[in-house]
Image (tube, rainbow, N blue to C red; front, side, top):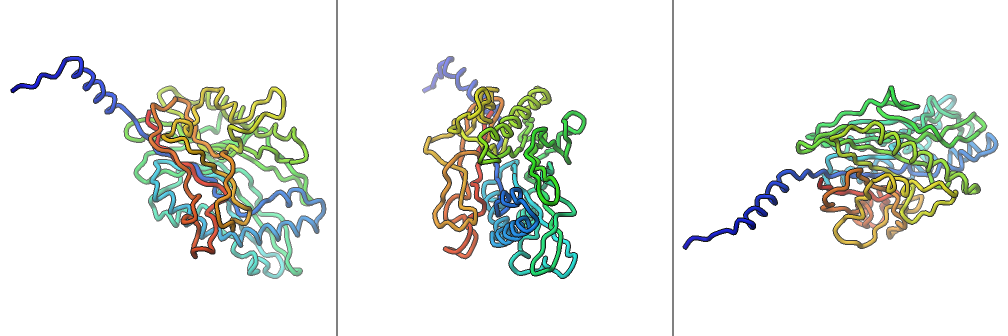
Length: 375
């Protein structure tokens, strides 16, 4: 007996097959690695003694946060999820140059002096490579500090980095001739917070960096950024201006420079959640700006609607249960995905903590966000 397939049904079947064949998927991740301490007391120090004390305390906290062990835990998350591209923020390197004596070897701070990027790449063991970098804060050769009369310089370098999986083709976008403040492969924002310290002005640079990538034959431009805190000066509500100005600069810059034919995906720590209200009249928050500019918040398209937050654990990362309370780490796309197959926060369960069990630390004060987008 012959089976006759209705022509209309067969046509629908063919269209489904063509659509499935043309669908393009990309899996991405964003992760703030966390430097291990709050630098605000250093920036607020009013005299050399206060500055020195704040530097030493920060170094002690960074060392106690076990940055190398945390980098291994973060790398394990990447290897488990296997995103094509990863946006990392707060990728710090701390160095130390002894001047008199050797305070760099003091047991309370020695663990702070490491390169978080090198630690991460070592743990990834060749599975991922650096695709592009923007250098933000750059304090080299460093600022002075002393412990028990021994003097040294501590250097600080902060970067945002895009990693590519080894089998993914990606190259940095050359913005050097078109952005106001080029930095390595990316750009620093025009509006940045500065702090007057006993050793001069420190600029808290923030930036963005992008790659052009091809995944399964589809072209993407993937951007990574870290915007300023909502209130870099907690005593001044108007300091919200900085992150809003940075967001305005970014989406306008991307609108002017992103080529047609590339799906634009924006990753980053936006320091701005859907719940944050605008404080300055007429100045929308970064989240509001991106949505108004036509960006889709991938999280809102995910299967299932259980709320999950991305920030923040305690400063010392020692809390036994996750304390994440707001969603400020984002995956945006300018072209609305056909669907988001999967989106979740990783690094936010007790099993993700560094060893030993029961005594370890959270890998970061932020959870990572990963999503698989289908265009």
